[in-house]
Amino acid sequence: FIPWFGGMTGGLDVFLGSTGGFLIGFIIASYFIGLITERYAKARNFTRMAIVIGIANFALIYIPGLAGLALWMSLQGATFTVVDILMMGLVPFIFGDLVKVAGAAGLSKVFLPKD
Image (cartoon, rainbow, N blue to C red; front, top):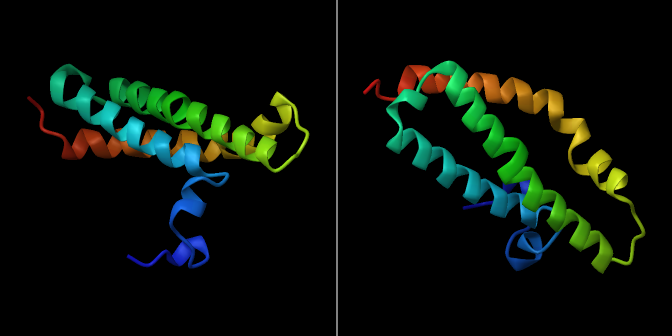
């Protein structure tokens, strides 16, 4: 495929860059959401799916993502604090992520099997 939105770059450089941890987090989060929705039919309502997707988003994506960002910054020789990392990699995205969690939970109610 062609990385249209990645500045026409790809490969190991991108994976080991500042966003590499987030890419790993997406894989972990998708597995977690799939596992929960496959095993627990009762989780397939709006409220429970919002919780599952919220955990996946704010824990399983952001923890490795922020760790990868911090690692990348330290390898670049930058000095930073935990607050700096949170302000760069988390805080600007919280509102949009909450909207996306609610939207995904609503769509899952429509598209996932009921039993």
